[in-house]
Structures are given as C-alpha cells and as structure tokens.
Image 1 (tube, rainbow, N blue to C red):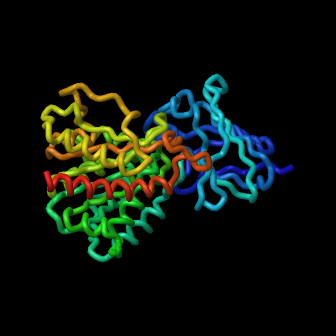
Image 2 (cartoon, rainbow, N blue to C red; image 1 turned 90 degrees about the vertical axis):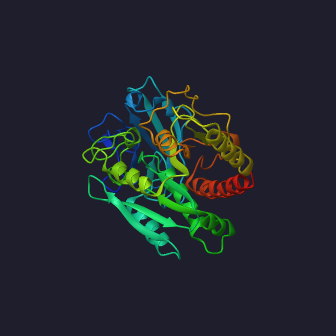
Image 3 (cartoon, helix red, strand yellow; image 1 turned 30 degrees about the horizontal axis):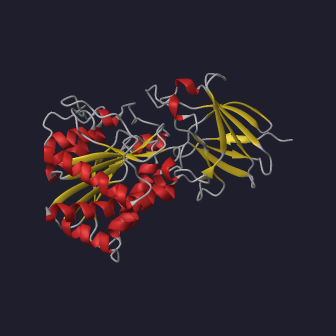
Length: 380
C-alpha cells in the first residue's frame, strides 16, 4: 500500500515531516523565524482516500502554549471551504508532548491546520472587494520587512475615530475571519447598522497587521522574530515597521474606540481584555469599556464575561501592548478581543468548534454592539 505524501510548501504552510509509514506520520512544527515560538501548523496530506490517517505532531511540550493542546481537536478540510474538526488526543508524556490526529478522508486530499487558514491571497481578495465598495478608501500605511503593504480600509463621515485591527499574531487567523464579517456589514449599502455606524464614525480597518508572519506560517512574530504586540511603546523601523506605520497613522487621526482582534490557545471561550492597569485610567473610560462588554454579552451567546485573563493591578499596565498604549496615549476605549482555538464552550458546536463562520458573525455582532454603545453614549 502506498505511503501518504505530506507537504506545507505553500502560503501559511508549516510542518516538518520526520517519518511516514503507510498512513501514519510523525511530524513537528517549525519555529517562527528567529524565534522560539511555535504552535501554528498547516499542511496537506495526499494519497489517503478512504484510509485512516494517524498523524502525530511531536515536541509540543516546548510549544508556545502547551496548555492549548488538552481538549483541542485539529481542524480539517477536504475542499478548503468547510473546516470541521478531526478527532485529536494530546499525551504530554509521549515524544516530548504529542497531539495524535486521526481522520479518514473521503477523497485523495485533506488539509489540516491549527485553525482555518487565512492566506495572503484571500487577504488581497478581501482588500480588493472592500476597496471597491462605495465610500471606501484604501491606503497602504507602510511596508513590512518583507516588503508587503500594511493595508488600511477607511470609510464613514462621523467624528468618532474607530480603529479595528487584527493578526498582530499571524497564527490567530480567526481575527481575519472576524474582519470579513465586520467589513461585510460596514461596506453593505443595504445594512442599516452599517449605514448608521458610517454616519457616526470614521472607520480605519487594518485586517492584517503582520503579513510577513502570515505568509511564512508563523504563530506569533514578524519576519524578524518580533512579537508586534510588545512593540507599541517604542516601535522601530528595523524591528517593527508595521507598528511604526500603524501607530503613526493613529497619531494622525486620533483614536476614540479601538479593537485589537486575537485568538487564545487555552481558554475555551470568547472574551475581552482591557486596560484597567494604565497609569492615567479615567473612571468614565473604564465605564465605557465595561458598558461595551455588557452590550456584546447581551447581544450574542458567542461572548461571555466570566472567563478571561486576570485583571491587571492599578498602575502596572504593560504599555508595550496596543490596548494599553492606545488607552493611555489617546484616552480611548480600547480592548483586545480574544476568540478560542478550541470552542466557545458556553455555546459549543461539536462539529466545527469555533469556526470561520462564527468568527465572521462575531465581527457583525461586535459592530452591532458598537452602534448600541454609541447610541447609549450620545443619550447619556
């Protein structure tokens, strides 16, 4: 019987093939360039139609977030459109920590990934589609270290400056699926929520802050091995030109409301993280953040406020992170939105877990909550 073939030689691909025996394979994840971070994988298996695959991804005890593997099922697709889940089991005592993925494909090809991939080609399709919508302007804020543009889509005529940006950590692809949903609402001339938001706000949407890491198949860093969400206090052209460009554009416009969109490896829920530890925290600023969280929780079962990160002690906020930096720098209501690699357990989906479709719907729900938040603020 022929052996399967495994490759990751494509946009956002990441895997190292250690051995193959029939339909069994022993694999490892390549580290981010010039970095010790690794967790993102994305590869294709061919030649296994109707045969059960056993794929062992090894060495995961040294990965960026070992706590992300227990209770996690890999995503799989045979058409690169629908991403379901493949039965997976983590054994921390096997081969340095091993995730064993089992799956029987119907056809000859199957793609496996840490989460549904969002390629740079799809990114350019998203940008082209949104930029062609009525009332939308596109600009490149600057170039990455690999020379890729930092795309920004702008729309709306209102005075409230809103910044939405994602994929500082490129392996957190749910962030760009979220962007699809948000942009779909904001650019649809028939959507009344979008119309009202554009009337009240000027939107600046950066769907992918880290195109180099995205194309290279990184989890967390750019082409220089730098975690961009630790560069916001003193970004540099040599290490983090992406943040130089983005923060510079924010300085030009000002920021009233900002959302930095991410994914979390370990916590099986959608949640927000705020800026409660910044030195200049204002009571009304924190009240605005809490009010938005309450509105979003009321709006969708795919968000909750019980699970999340521990609160930061007063005055100890890390200003190298964007949410804290923007709250401190502009007095903005800023926040980090975290979606799970596993599932949102309060409203679990056994077939897909957290998915591209739910990420996109959450983008729409976040925009609906923003409109409610603005209406309440105007009436206060």
